[in-house]
Image 1: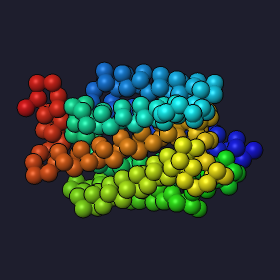
Image 2 (image 1 turned 90 degrees about the horizontal axis):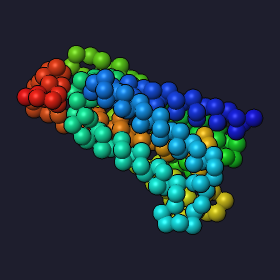
Image 3 (image 1 turned 90 degrees about the vertical axis):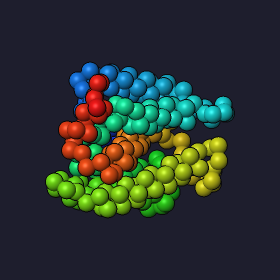
Length: 243
């Protein structure tokens, strides 16, 4: 029963976050939104199918299939955020929207805590252990609200993004260190649960969404440094033929 709660929670959050991420990418244009929707859908179906078939449970190859499956969407998120398309998204989207989406990390951490309680996930990956990423989700709400002002506090946004980025790196490090490759927390605390469906959505949908959000925030901050441009003029620079 507890595993069902975790499975339903993980799937629901992943679906919502995937839809919100596609909507965010859609700020770069309708065609980009359609492509993003197709890519995200195909990735989710492929990753779910691989996990359901047990293809990601083999830890003997180097690198293991799970790490490859997780690396692909994370790299795709980074490449998109740093590309010209990412520039258009950052220029035409408010900090409030970019940061507000990251509030999903609050309910996600609650679901992960339940997974730890049920014995599905090793405790070090929850806030009862060494994962404090729940703070990023909690703080995203007031920071997004503050950012809705006409002149949002740059210092507040930078502080949130630094904390969130560091906490994301922390849990990613813990997650990788907990795999059978390293078993840093002992053989009784291995991170193998994400190789199964629907938990595969954690490293292949939710982590990339978090990476994308932070990268996009850094991108928007760097774009606005010393330019004094309005959002419309910033967006114009990243449109085909923009100045």
